Image 1 (cartoon, helix red, strand yellow):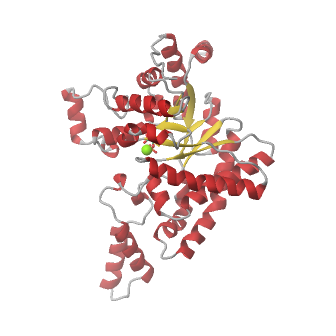
Image 2 (spheres, helix red, strand yellow):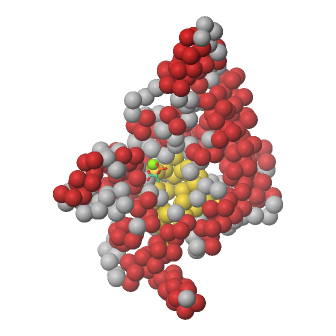
Image 3 (cartoon, rainbow, N blue to C red):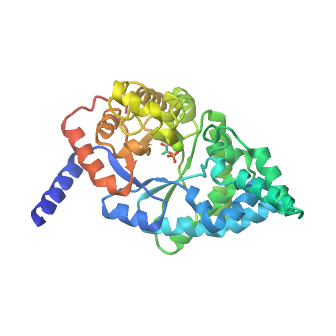
Length: 372
Ligand code: PEP
Ligand code: MG
């Protein structure tokens, strides 16, 4: 098996010498970042920040989102800041010298809010036992009911949350900027990038970006360390793809979120891919493979092509990648090469596969893109 390992290593080295696509990884812990690096990742293309708001921090997140006033929300954000800074310092250290694309918070809201059925049951149980319900439970249920959405995946997510919860974007960006300062002072070479999720209109990106730039300037000024982070956006809604020329005016890079782009283009819930009709569709040959696994070239892929062309027409040389699950799928990697992307980003374990496929795509000479 040592022979096999050698052969694989040789194939990977060969692929690396010919491929045009850069291969990054999706990682959101220092451990994953280090693993990705060992597999040959050239940076992090997607650092999701959602998991950083779960566990012990849930309570603070509830306070931040359901706050009854500015003071309560500001207290929660203040408590979250040093925790976020530590998250980012660790990841930037593990990826020192390589780009780390940190995405602003993008949860479907229901994952963060307390379960309202549970709250209602607790209140009813107290009442049934003749006790007054916990006033905190009653207050919480009222707040959760006001925020309730029938379709959280189409609701207060991504940039929408950042624009609606005052101070949230500023807290995250400050944490990134302060982590950059800390790593710079420690002699490191942090390369953080800030990515705005679920943008559908250039105005959303413009508003978020103004806030990002303001905080970066603030931290640069306070620390005396100039913090320069490119600000870019995900392209994961059909409207974003179709208006990519406008969006590129405010974006230093694009990254396709093909999970959401597939969901919103087909109108299939990415959380219900096991639903009855899905396997029936596979059986009946509506599609040969799940469009969530292999890029649907004629639909979602067309939107990718449109966005690449429009984005680069508006901003020549615009850096463009993909960070949906498709970034680690061999057939999709070929498509992204041909579409003229700069990088794919996939799970750390898929990095070697993506490197090999990017090399094969380059050798096959299927690169017909002349848009750069
Ligand atoms: C995507 O939508 O493809 C993406 C990368 O973002 P997430 O999976 O976190 O929604
Ligand atoms: Mg997404």
